[in-house]
Length: 180
Image 1: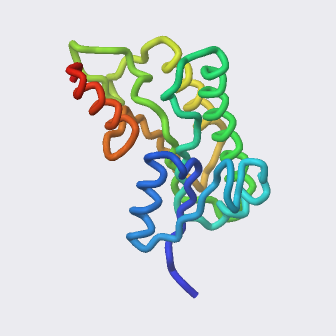
Image 2 (image 1 turned 135 degrees about the horizontal axis):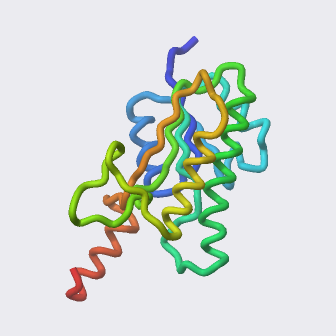
């Protein structure tokens, strides 16, 4: 029998998810994934619950990329893809006999108002307004809904993540044409 720690990553096919999965595997973690394709998909709620049962950590990075035109259809999908997958994961955690000890759920730092006069922190941040704030608020409301006594929940309010990925490539292109 092994004492290998297990993490489940939802949305592991994105830039952050791939990097996280690779880093955890390099550190000896057993990494399992939930996604649109693969061994466990969003269409399999019972399989998701079974995968989460006994896991040490759940990381949810699922959601449509915001690197798109904000048409009504895309806005709806950005919101729906985050709220519904988070709801599905919460129901799956509830269904487990041994829930994950920690659930890290992506969110966005754009929940805060744009501010040049002072920093926005967890303690002093001022919630802003607009589409991104509406998405973040709905997402976090779903994430923290209900009681999960065996699982500590942490919202990851991330901003643009730089590395060898899409955000950096776009910034490099802008710099090359003199807009950097």
